[in-house]
Image (cartoon, rainbow, N blue to C red; front, side, top):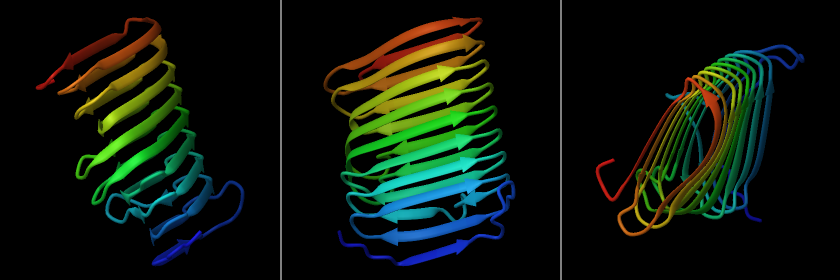
Length: 226
């Protein structure tokens, strides 16, 4: 597989098992990339809002794991046909922001997110700036007071959620045309769930199994204007 590496800057300030303050910034364009990042400790950075990890190309496989507290990850997938990404956060107060299809087409993509801990934040957007089809996203959240905000402007967007814990805030928007679906298993108390599905041509589907008390669940399904 062909790889074209524009620039990689790896700033690893410490390698001790419980250390932190490691920084990684990557810009990569090309096909067939396999990228694995493991950061263990606190206050590690894999891209920031001002200096994101930037990836572009087809058939990418990206796996990012952060273990510890107060870690930051921010990435832009400029174009990623036939690609898969996995992000895992274990710890508390970790923050992640991912934008897919920022400047190019993204089709037949798969994204898996897992958070274990408290007060973790994920902001995920796919297809907002460019054409996107066939987006499949899986989310597994275990802990309290996690905040997950997912926007999927994709033709044929599929979300699978497993949420376990209390006072989690889950917001998801699916927009565009053709067959959006969300499958959710929710366990815990005082969770706040908002689901908006806008489909201009076909069917919106929500399949939720909820075991919860004192929770708020709001579902809007419409052809436009949700």
